Image: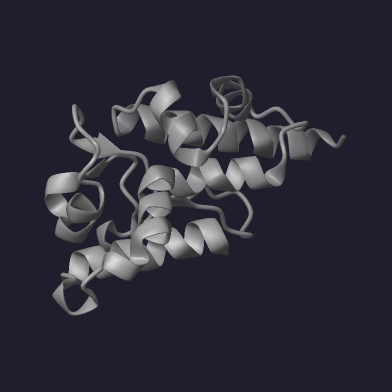
Length: 147
């Protein structure tokens, strides 16, 4: 593997680690949100080339980062309106809270869990009652998990 490629992956892993720490998110929470194991997450933060590109992009997405094709630039943080929270608060999304009535003992869930709840229970969503923020979250989750 070319040294330049290794250097870029190391820089990408470092940017991911810095953003995760900046957001005060644990490795376990970040990994679960991205649908990855904590071991894979640690390998990503080290910039290991054997980790799949999809895993790197999942890590970027849950931290609100974007990878570009421009050279010598670190991934940039997304605009607040375009970010998916690493932990989704029920109190901020009324329809999600309604759909997840059976979940007790936590105020937050991962994006993957939220998407699963929306998918399984969509027939119960009152679309006309969706607030703009929640509508945007659903759209962002769909893009993340369905491409």
